[in-house]
Image (cartoon, rainbow, N blue to C red; front, side):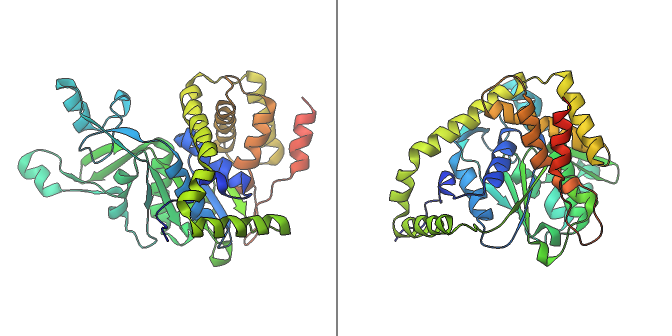
Amino acid sequence: MQHNAVYPFTAIVGQEDMKLALILNVINPLLGGVLIKGEKGTAKSTAVRALADLLPAMEVSTGCPFHCDPADVSRLCDSCRGRSEEQTLPVQSVKMRVVELPVSATEDRVVGTLDIEHAIKQGEKKFDPGILAQANRNILYVDEINLLDDHVVDVLLDAAAMGVNTVEREGVSYSHPARFVLVGTMNPEEGDIRPQLLDRFGLSVAVAGENRPECRVEVIKRRLSYEQDPAAFGRQHQAEQEQLAASIMQASRLLPQVTIKDELLLLVAKLAIALDVDGHRADITVIKTAITLAAFDGREEVEPEDVKKAARLALPHRMRRRPFEDGTLDWDKVEAVFAQQ
């Protein structure tokens, strides 16, 4: 019995919000990642690995520790930029992969280290890449992110939002591209995550086991079918997989062309005020998510429905709350703001 075939993404039953949030972050990694809250056994890690397997191979600069995209000159590391000025960068194809970050990881292991002694003696920077270097153009998966050191989470979220990792030691600094899809999972019963860190995640979804008997039966049937013959099960879903992969790649190409009208920007601002969210990060994330939703739907202009869907993914974890309470989104208030338009 072979189990090396990854469970197909399109075969996952239910969990539509989780699947959509993951897809949107792959289309637009600068959304800032997704936090998946829920009990164990709800297909969280299955979905993450399945999404990475779904996507076609990408072109990378051969030998580059950051897997630079030779076609994207603006995001090359220093080494690739220097080489590209002298010659055409050699290219190889690799699959997107899931880079796991253990809960015990130290900051140095995450961001990488600078050899200060080498810099002083040789007059050149020597950088030992960390997990963020491996994660560039991949998915960075952190299980039980609520148990990770707060400072390390802060570093991760900074890099996810900026697309760059900068290491500074004793007046010497080194930067490299770190554009990845950050996926954090947590079981709220095992401890909470600080509100300041929660707000930094682009999207957040809650997952639970299916509560409809027919859906639970379908989950069981598909899992047993997959375990019996993974290859045959994969072939059953191949057409759906290829169609979704094509839609994601098309959306990535369309994303820079998508526009949003000023009246929808005003709508988002009114929404944030009505829901009493702190700061401006919520507004910006809703807008970026709405733009990505439009691209995924193959459109070059954002519609009000995109904003409404984006609010459902980007706002619940930003609601003000008392200690030990979950933030909840008052959907009636959302509908009232839209009704005024």
